[in-house]
Picture (tube, rainbow, N blue to C red):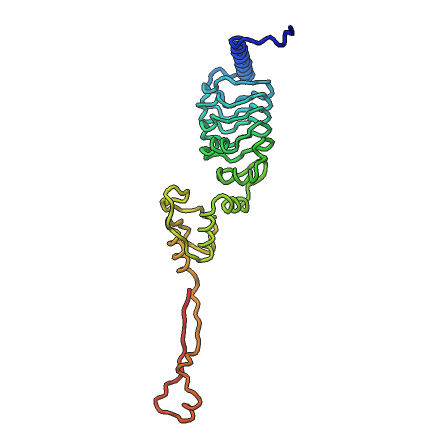
Length: 287
């Protein structure tokens, strides 16, 4: 009987996996300690950056002990997930490109993240990826290209719609045209309101409570926000109010026309009837 056909006991397989995981963590721990020696760090609070790229790492030890860590390089390894960043709240730059990552569960623990590079990985679930990144309000630079999820139709606009704070996506600047396009494609109700206000029309104010356009407290938009020629930059709770205020700020238009009912006919002028009043003008004022 061939040796390759002999079934491997389940207990042995579990032991092998556990042994491989322990070896991977030992390699990771050794890489971290070597980096600390190179930088001359003696206390965990002194560590602001870790360079762990190109170490053939498949797993990484828990890095929560480095509470002031800001910069972490882990690119060009063999990582499959991100479960080692749970309390690194100060982390601002994370480089995870060129790995084998297929899920990013755990990234939502990093509220200060400003730069995140995830290109050249194995991310396939677009919705799960966006869900994990939604809470990162400080995220400005994001790269996801060369992942299977990039093959989805309208992938770029979908990312821009759900992560409006991102300014640089896949090494390309996010443009205002793309932001307008994603509203038109993914938020039909908001697009309808914008168009109605822009053209002075009326909109239906009967909202679904679960709608993403539910009423919010009045707020001020940035000073560089261009909204037609309005001087007041107030964002209204009720779109009907916005339409009314906009209409009241338009220039006054006046049209004058002859009131032909007061103009005497030829017969009246010939007979020169007494009491004939002079012709009158009609004036119509519009906004």
